[in-house]
Image (cartoon, one colour):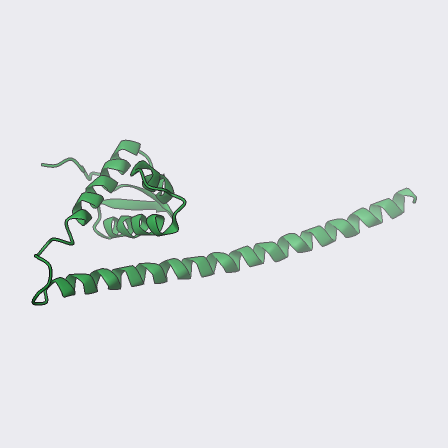
Length: 144
């Protein structure tokens, strides 16, 4: 093989490699869209479940008021404390780990992500970029 043949073969392989990179990037973009759609659906379902749980408690014969809701405010306080201690934007998985839970369990991560999104909606937390959460400017999580 002479020099020109080697350069031609290398050029062909480079073109094939670039085409594969482009194909994989398109696939990654498509998957990112699907992941975001799934996250929105999970959030929507979790919200619906929580609303229905709240309504069920108001029905006659339901558990005493606030019985099922007690852990919620405590969890929210814990989330705010973790973000305050970090002093910087934190990934949801890191918040889960800081709470002493297994961040490899998707259900736990999604539960915390949903609560963080609720704190974002309440103005207590900001999502500095997708998946990074920090205390909102001027919000003091300390009681009183």
